[in-house]
Length: 476
Image (tube, rainbow, N blue to C red):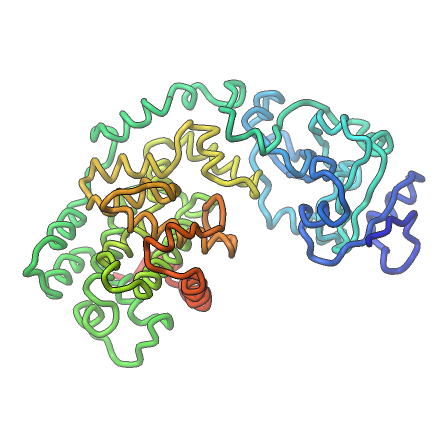
């Protein structure tokens, strides 16, 4: 049982935050818990509501930095906050935050604006709580104090409403106050119109058309594929670097792209990977950010690897076309790249929401801001580009376990892969459970699915290196 304790004088409780509170001569309690617990786990152990636990987000703009204080289980509507304050706030970089708090030798961000000498704004709903809890920067303790005592540390803090309970998020749409005119004008119907009208989009890259044509040519050879890819020296170099990577552990010599395909990578892998790279290059996407190109490739490669492993574990009679399944894993989140290309204001806003609400599912945020998810947006584009229907189905329905059609095996494989990866905090799946009916459809046992996950996670570092190689300019 966890026992609260008053005024921590013991060495174990020594902290600059505790020194600060003690000098302020306020009453507070310290609650012990095991190290490295999340706030949700602590709340469950101690028996307190999550809305009594506080979290802190740091933002900045030309006017300076701002500490934002809100309940742990609330969604920060950064657009609404900016509109309320008349500011253009952005999340502060992790590096800058690290320097600020490393100097004070604390590991968490306590909601004490005067301590860090940063002005603050506080969610007004906090005033409804009788007791307030927060982490003081010591890994195994939690501070509790009365609301009135806590508010003494918020003398210059503005109290306004700028957040909502996360549980309400799926039933709401973004209020107009937090969205620019440019964003307001685009309803889901208008988004679909812009996606399906090719005048709004980059044309299907010529090389992508050539690769797609080759896919359906029964007489296609490795030489044909290499000839197409070698028209782009950068792409050719990227694929060569893949063949030489530790992930494939090939110890022989590779002197040509054709050799890389035959000896290491294989025809299907090179065709699908080249197609994804070429389609991605048609989009102007920032590298960093939760929806940036780096995260896209890390997630895409892990998902495709899990899908590939699952296919190999399936009974022969149930297996889909392996190359198409792998391609579905690579392209399932292609809607994020499209958002960056065609809807830059939306993309920038979604990244801000994602950065300030890291525990909220990205698809929930998309529906809150746009009224539509990346799965639908990506499918609209791939339909316009006439990609294989198997891939389009996987892109459109990989969040829907009820989906049934002749192509459901592809969407189901991606669904299982993304839910498995979510157990390692990778990707945007809304849950981690594997539906028994879906596993039975695929001819898999849950133990086999977990083995596939373990196998891919054992190669995660190498996959991240490969993802990085897809971002870096290659020698010509």
